[in-house]
Length: 120
View 1 (tube, rainbow, N blue to C red):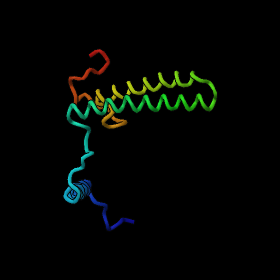
View 2: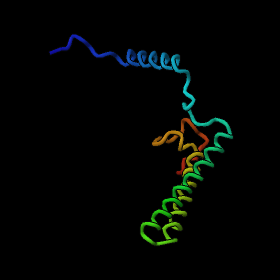
View 3: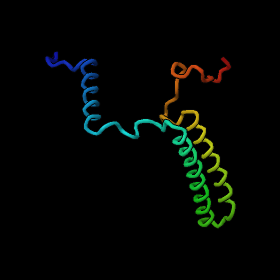
View 4: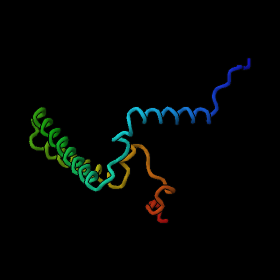
């Protein structure tokens, strides 16, 4: 029951993936969305957009809840504070680098100067 056709080795698979990525870049050029904004103006724009978007969603949602339930102005007030908190959290994630790759954190080997939070 041995299969005469072996599956490709990891090295062969890696070489094929590398070749496919290179041909994709040659056809379309490097993606302009490949990384996070590198300059200070890009970071500033991202921070501003994060804050404004969170506030718009929070205030808009509060206004809609108030109109739907007739609880004016309580929904607007509560959602204003929730939107503010979400905006500040997004700005923190953007500045600390946690927002660059959702679900992944930088490890100590990549950023040794960053404190780990365990007192060491």
